[in-house]
Length: 56
Length: 397
Image (tube, rainbow over all chains, first blue to last red; front, side):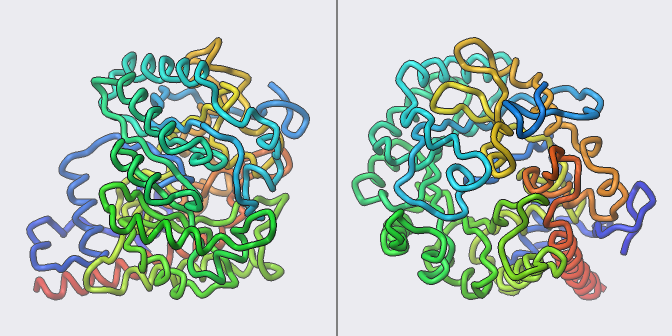
């Protein structure tokens, strides 16, 4: 387990040494798609809002 | 402010510190309040608050017109560039596909120059080729509810006669699979009696762009269905872990799964875009067929009146709704969580879980009734990510 910002043990995953440059090697797996999403969000941060759960 | 269970609205005890309201960007319009199915877990008709059974069946033209004006007023005042609008029920297709298409057109014109993603969430039974064409031509996206294969779906999703709905929904989804431009995705409620891998594979057969697994609406006063002690045994968490592995263990992603993708994004330090996990402010609001502004309708699973605001499109703006304390608490993030949650190492990820699932004896400031399930799932997903990152780093070396 990693340590979170508030000092408690947490489940957050450290991505500090991963960059978009690493990803062309990856396939289109759910793992790779998820990495691309978060790295894109880091590059272009936006205020996220939570949508309603009962519709797609 | 009224007391839960004794009147309209929610009592927000010990409200969190005021935060700057986030404008509504998702509008759920209850265009038809009846349904042609009688699913036994339905939060609109079968759980704690059943008043939808006597709401006006249809949103009148006058109320719809006023709603358009209120939405436009809010969108333009806050200079929003894009919004989502869900035409919902009951079963929205009881209003007729042509009516829904006209509504979409009116709403888009009202919010212009902002863009509007208009969708319907349907049980699929009335979605024939003609209705699909009308909606698709109007640019309306279609989400369908299906609980997997015939056996799983027909266990809960039935007509009042007891007949299952699978055949009609199967037909609709086959049509929709051939219209990817109109296909929003599939919602599936978790059923412990069904095998998670088989359910996931059954959904994949319809080539959905995205699916979501929803936990049955339950709370501490009305526990989840399932074998006794399901909550303490984390049976729902184990079910979701198996479904996650079925989705995750493929070389190429076959579809998106909203819950899993949002959990991964949170675990990697990002934000969630769904109210079921994470701490992002909820920016969704409901307009009922009677013109009343309501909180998200799943709160009907907790007690009669939980959704009420006592505000209406006749007399109030969406800005008035934003100032309602029960709306504000959904935008308060960490400070709205129970003390037990704030002390938990996974609280930034679960965010306390879906709000209705936290209800106990008049208060929502509790952990989710699915707390153990969520923790099990989150730790499982975290472990899978760590293993893959370790593998990625070793390849780089």
